Image 1 (cartoon, helix red, strand yellow):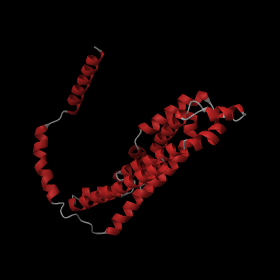
Image 2 (image 1 turned 90 degrees about the vertical axis):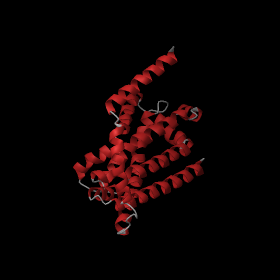
Image 3 (image 1 turned 90 degrees about the horizontal axis):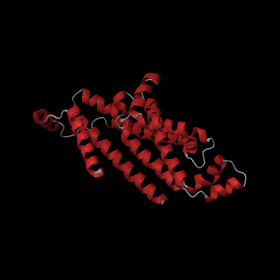
Image 4 (image 1 turned 60 degrees about the vertical axis):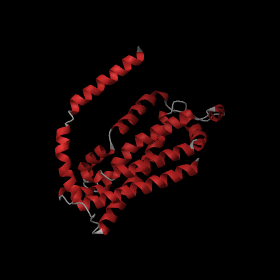
Length: 248
């Protein structure tokens, strides 16, 4: 009965989603020929001005890398406060968890949009957006790694007079370093992908070049930029995967 009820609720939820989205296969069929014409005009891809593409690609990598680094610095104290066994102030556990949920719940794209209004156009706003969103993700992964670690060395350190924060910093952080470093690499890889679209709100990177090409209906240029984005993501994926395997 419980399983049948679950399937019924899922079916009702999907029916509600269909009602809200209102899929229209007729519109899709009518639009596909137009899309095919655009795609046929995209060949061959336009790689003219390679210096501009290279500059935008470097901005994307810099936004993702510096944003991830700043996020890791922000995440370390948050992770300690959000790890129940070593939280120095237990009454802050749930408020800090709420902060992490907020940072993860607001996409980096939205943060970048807000900070473009605050600091102006350019990669700096994109970096802030990436850092704030990623800090929540990294801190959550780190706190879970700290909670899942063997607490016997921590208890020994606490019995010797160390504070919970000191015990975590001296014992747990080195013990969980492979997991925490792997989490940072995974987030960095995801940020490479996310940073490619931040330019759509004026936050620099390849997204800025992509937006310019779309606005001009220059689909050959769009295809060239998409090829560069895919290549960049593939390189980041392979590099991140190799580094994560080396930590095991």
